Image 1 (tube, rainbow, N blue to C red):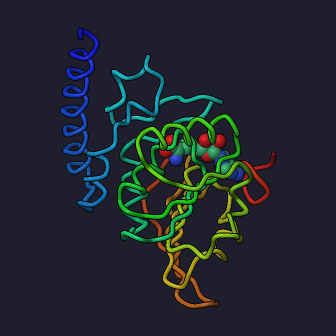
Image 2 (cartoon, rainbow, N blue to C red):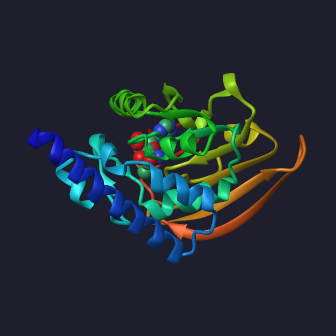
Length: 223
Ligand code: SAM
């Protein structure tokens, strides 16, 4: 009985903090209501160790297993906004990490395919998404090569910092598809959006600088 009361109190506190986070992201410039609504719905604390629950709704990156991070909510919101996701879109995520970005995309109604190079993270995020009732396709492997079996994709997001735009990811975009990828050195990366305008042509836009953990793989940093 006491545990049940504690759980309800925790849920209420988390919901209040989540709403405050959504307001903070809005003030920082996130405009897309479907992105903000998804962030307001996802229990971010479920994606981090319980020792970090008190920080789960801060706008900051937090450590997860294998020396990796769950991205800062502002970063997740910015990348998702740039992807221009609509319900039913087929979306590829490179860098599953905690599974949080994947859950945001599922909540927005996308069909999500996600690739992570660490098996431990793939398995853990698969379990969390299942527990929360989201369905996604998980793969452990080198995401710089994409996941061609299910392409082409309406949107692709890379959640680790790349030295160059991975060619295979560009090629797995549908016409009209958007690739959102941070590109730069190991210190900071410029957020790029590449739109496939027809079979042969792409347009590229540049946004703000961010700092990500490195994208390690054949078309990323050496491994
Ligand atoms: N999207 C994640 C989330 O919501 O928690 C954030 C992920 S973290 C910032 C970046 C992830 O990319 C790490 O888990 C890292 O292991 C993974 N990664 C790095 N290089 C990769 C590659 N070539 N293929 C797949 N995953 C990769």
